[in-house]
Amino acid sequence: MRTLEQLRLDNPLLTPQQMAAWDRWTIDEFGLPEELLMENASRVALDVLRERFPRVGAPGAPDCLEGKRVLLLAGPGNNGGDAVALARHLLDNGAVVLVLTTKSPEAYKGTAQKHLEYAQKAGVPFGFIQIADWLRPMDQLPEEYGAADREGFCDIIVDGLLGTGFSGELRDDYKTWVQAINKIRDRAFVLAIDVPSGLDGTTGKPSPVAVRAHATVTMEAAKTGIALPEAEPWVGRLEVRRIAIPRAVRFAQPVQRALLTDAVASLVDTPDPAMHKGTAGRVCIIGGSHGLTGAPVLSAIAALRAGAGLVTIACPGGIASEVKNGQPECMTLPLGEGTVLVPEMYSELEERIPGFDALLLGPGMGRDPESARLLKRVLAQENRPPAVVDADGLFHLSQRPSLLGMLTDRDVLTPHPVEMARLVAAVDTMDESSAMERYTENRIALAEGFAERFAPCLVLKGAGTVVAQKLAGNDDPTSFLCPIACPELAIGGSGDVLAGLIAALLGRNDRNSPPLPAACLGVYWHASTGRILGRSVPGRGAMAREIAHALPQALKELIHAHSQGHHDHGRGLG
Picture: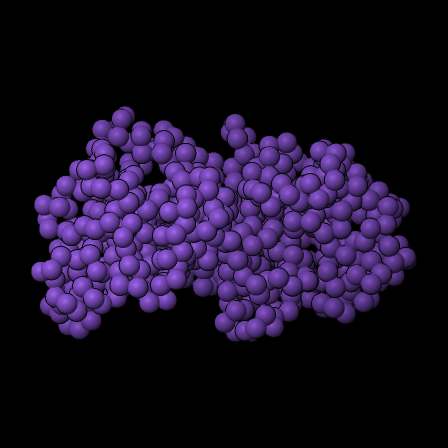
């Protein structure tokens, strides 16, 4: 079984600045020439196109790209150099190519200039983007090309205008070119190299417009901006391809961010043949109140579907029958006789808590101040197992920030954006709208900043959930981004299912081990379930209970995909 550290090394998530540092270390310290890296980048871009346009017919049939008319747009930097080198390979594969440059060829410098010279010697035709007729984009082809090739529309557009180093706002001329590409993208396949031009490689936001690519091939590792789900309208299918930067660079220039992929299936434990219900994980869900009995039941179903051996819902005695009727497979622990959790009920919990392997605190707990006092007593118990705090439990933490100090590095917090804003506002003494702005600006940085200050593992839910925790021995928090965004999961009760799932995974852990691997597996597993529901229950018709019931099928598909060598990151990352 692979470790989370191995998964982080295999799927790093870089800022543009970190990628530049990797390139520079490879060239200066390792000795690989930049010219070779650019050649490799062009070849993997060619591979992506060949996969998009596969060979038709028996072996020996014409190459898949033969006869394809390809317009390549090359800016003055290394991104443009990649496009120019790709043009040479396309020409060798029988494609009809035209490179439009933003400057005269003589103005190109460094490695990009070398590859431009190679392309010129190979016979690649060049033109100027400033005089491009976007309705007749191949017009600048030399006369020796046939009339059909010169006057016809292109089949493929390659965006090599701007690379990962772009930030700020596009110049007016670049805006014009980007908008022209977007107007004709319904007539040609658009491939962006490294990052769609105009898209910020850190934030994933257009500045103010960006190329809307059908696919983006990014080199060596995904960049933060293009991996975010909100960048998908511009990125399209995201392909991550290695270009021979040595693995040693990942150790010499380590990054603490990574992407979650199907490879998280390697974190799944193989069940012990001698396992019984007492060794499969005992989960206690403390929650439920008048009118809020569904949340703990949904969490219990999810925990059972995730493989927990025994699940107990500790709830007010006045609603215990209602809770039991919601899910007969789980046990109930009635507390007192009322319908609200109060601190006096702790006496009935104190001796039972050490017998559980994991706690889930908050689903349906309600917001009565007395419930917060019970929560405090549970958190303060020295011999308690790891806990997931969700829903109303998070509300009570935001109202009493001192409770955050009672959480340990074995615990997990699972806030959605509003709950996160409430927590941040409480600990930073700001209003919730300002905290929400920080979330909107950069939720990864927000999650990492919170993990820097507080011990628990943070699962910041949303379209592109972030999992972050500061591990022992590390200077900075380790964070993982789940790039899957499934509208099927945007429904009340979905978070209760995720919390129950993570609690079940914690229940199978050693009590002293960090919860980060379980949280990462739970988040990606839950997100993958949304994709199954998108197929089986279209139109967002799935209910939260169905999310829980689909968990076993999702895990089966996840394990199968990983065993077949598929490394899908939710948007076709390879």
